Length: 308
Image 1 (cartoon, rainbow, N blue to C red):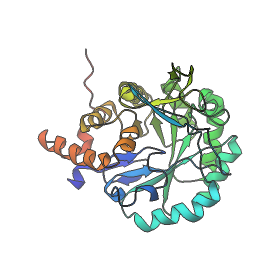
Image 2: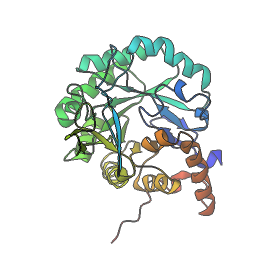
Image 3: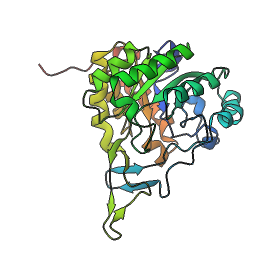
Image 4: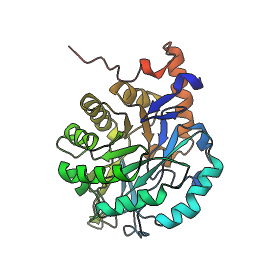
């Protein structure tokens, strides 16, 4: 089954396409003893900024009938702490799973500084530039909302590293395929779609937002068709691998993303609810391939049959 599920994305070999989406596993240590991270294709770390960030006020997470709202505010311990404490742990515990680091900043030079500061870490396989966070006031969606600004950012990071760069885009973009094209033209090796979708949930009893920040990002099963459509649009526009993210809770959801063109599939909210789910997704995908006589995922990726 291992060979059947193997994929290659941006020059990196993944033993299977299942990846923990950014923020789901923090920096890996938090899931030690709960899940076998090395059984997955890889993980995207929690965000890393130059300096520590305290994040948004509590409460940061709240459930609603259609999924989950969050406004964590990209809280993280900062570049030095991640480099000196978190990445060595990953290097000591992972042998097969790939590690992509989610990178954030308030300015282009901050993104570059984080990447340059991580270049000496051998466990880092590549980077995911977060240009689509809906729950911070600065350093969030503005980098992905303007193609010229995005191109400047990607170009600057491209000059700082030879490792693969994925760019994570928002589902709220008016032309997500065009934005992906701008990122690729500037040097991106891959695209991640989608981030959470901006939303607001109000508590009728208190007449206040359920999150301390106010608005936040909506995720969960309701995001599945949004992410699948974005994946299909982007893979028709660019010739780089896409990581499809949003709403995945079952092997059939993984297959939807693969058929739409995704090479990697990021699991987020469902893994927070059930941390052992990603391992079951790997097994379930293997069984689906066996039932359908699939010997390589190349026969699945991008094979959506669109109505005439």
